[in-house]
Image (cartoon, rainbow, N blue to C red; front, side, top):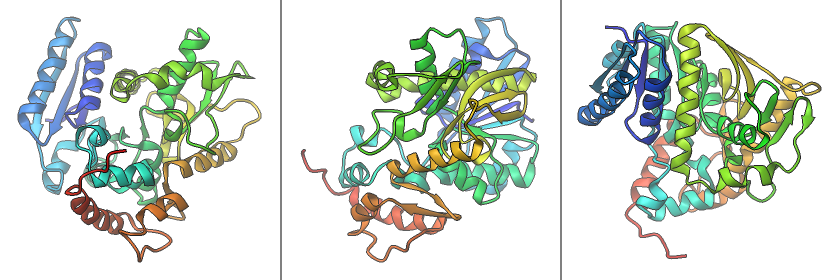
Length: 353
């Protein structure tokens, strides 16, 4: 059976997306929740289905368990789906607080970008399956899309867009400015600016009806004080609206990370299955991309000429563990090397600050 939407993952972000689908999709529509544990996937599917039932909408949620390394089974699940949403990765963003170790300490020094190969691996597997079996399916990646989506595009894999990050920043600014929608709002923001930017990193840029927005940092203070896990609720709701627009062929102005594999986040116009950049007057696409490429340096890792490179800070943090590191890495090679580093450092107790 082909499903309209296939969601990969059962964590907090996947749940937020599924709850949003239950609240926003217009039926009839079907969704499949795929996780490593069928029990957890069934739980997500049941709650989403129950929420949809309270709206009297014909939305059916089903569950499946799958090892994403099983290529044949994965290709079977994505075949003829209209949209696949990847909400699962090999690196939890919460590990630093739930299971601190030498590995999370290294991530803190090197930057979140050191997890890029772990964020990209499962997304690449899904995109590869879509390309092989169901090229008409749209791939939405919710895992570090600002950096992962360019990697997928460089590998020649299909990627429609990401969700979250710039969408959260833009929504916070929309709320602060009292705007009814995002039609006149234009925001450039990278994952590195989701919270207070690190030293040297530029602040997110915003325009309202063509006029630069002042005191962006102050306007984002409340959003940046919210716990990261809670921000998934915004990401999930924004994803639900995006998916509904794609399924129903409707249009709206919004903000998305990694559209068509671009780095960072942009204002866009969604028209059904089409996404176009929606930049403020006087800003070219090349300038917007260059700005996001610069911001990516402050996450510690980015794509350059088809290879993953690290910032000087990240390289210094990794030097002890990857002393023979080249200037650039292929995705799979870097993942294998970092898997070994992570395995060893997870057994090391984090130093008390």
